[in-house]
Amino acid sequence: MTEYCVNHPTTEALSICHNCGQHFCADCLSEGKEYYYCQAPECQTALNKELNPASIPGEITCPSCKAVVQLNKDELLKHLFRCPECDSLINVSIKGPEIIEDREYVEILSSLNQPDIAVLHSVLDDAGLDYYITGQNFLSVRPLLEPARVFVASDQVEQAKELLKDFEVHLFGFSTQKEVDEE
Image (tube, rainbow, N blue to C red; front, side, top):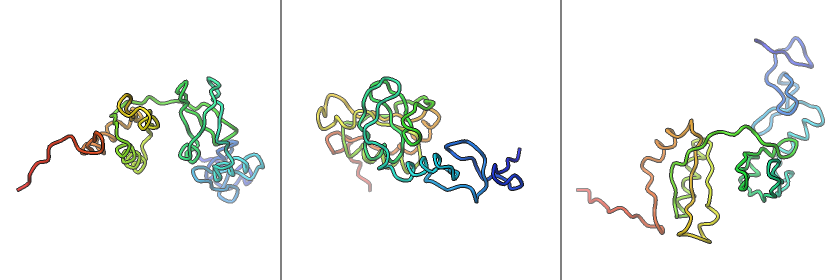
């Protein structure tokens, strides 16, 4: 079904405004990093929050469990974070923090090595996979007691495993596998 612009009823809509949900043509929308917004003042405020993560406070109260959570730079840029207390997935880009529909995640591997975690972040980010890593901030505090654990959305597990099939987890920054001489 073809939708038409709210402001121009004879013009086909390009998209909806991410904030108010109404249909608009290209002339009526402003493009954010991920979404389109109409010209209404409250929608332009939401656009500014998307474009300027500094406008989002670095400390958020979880709407579910009321825990106060300090957001890191990556969470501010993605506008998403997972509450460490109740594990709710929270969107902070529009109208303050709100819980969004959660997905099922599967643990695919764990590591005690911080450089491994950095590589995993890079590979999974580049592939555009939906993932999160727990325990990565404790590796320097309790390095042998609690590994960082990598979780991937259940519908992307096979893709993640294929990407990481040749990835070798290191213990203490060196390989635990014997090198094979190639002749």
